[in-house]
Length: 139
Image 1 (spheres, rainbow, N blue to C red):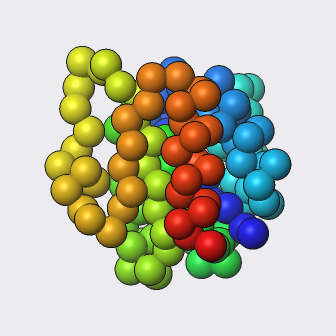
Image 2: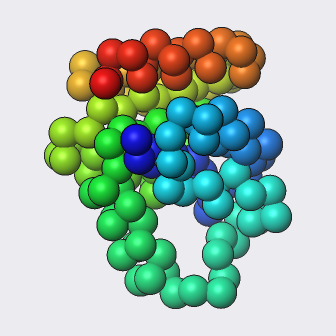
């Protein structure tokens, strides 16, 4: 199974460790095409060794080839929002994970979209449970 993981890079890297933990778990379930999202050495500047055009083409290729999309959506990100819109048009199963007890609420454009599975989680164990249930429903 090919898994596209989406998480904020240029929108902020505060949750990079969480991304890394989720990606580690997802990698036990399939091939995570976007493992670099969890790389804590990537800062808010993003990947500086390649052009934005190359990043766009590479990521769109990965998104198109993926079987499912898992997005950590707590940190708002233009790129993640764009990826989710494309995933919807491609009819990919999408799981959006949002950290509970935040000062902000998840966007209604995500939470109100019945095509997406959106789950608030309190800890990594809970996120893993949501991932497992999502995988069962998506296969």
